[in-house]
Image (cartoon, rainbow, N blue to C red; front, side, top):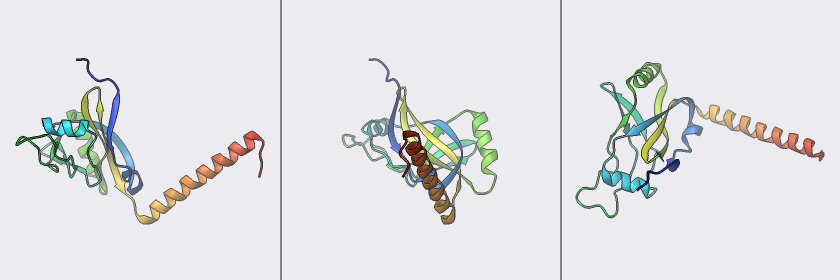
Length: 159
C-alpha cells in the first residue's frame, strides 16, 4: 500500500492565537498507541486545554484529548494521557533556554498527519492580557477596512 502524501489536518487550536502572542513555532512528532492513531485518523481530537512541558530533557504533551477509539477493545488508550514529543536535542535545548524566560509557555497550535506521520505544531507563546486582545482585534479590523478601501479605490468606486 502506498504511503500517504501531503498534510491532513486533524485538530486546530484557533483560540490560542487570540489568547497568546506567538513567538516561535516548532513541529514535533508524537509517540502514540495504535488506538490513538486510529482515533486521530477518524478526525477526533481536542487541543483546547493542551500544553507542553519539559521534564528531564524530554518534551511532553499534556491535556490534549484524543477520545477512545470506538472499535477498540481492552487495548484502548486513556484519553488525556501525557504523550512524548519527538524533537532533536538541539531544538529541545533551544526551547528550554527560551522557556526559562518568564512568561513563555508551550502550547499546541495544530495536530495533523504529514506524509502518514502524526505531528503536532507547538508554539512558544506569551499570554495576552484582555487589553492586548482588544488592541489586536482593533488592529486587525483597521487593516481589513484599509484593504477594502484600497480595493474600492482600485476599482474606481469611491464612496
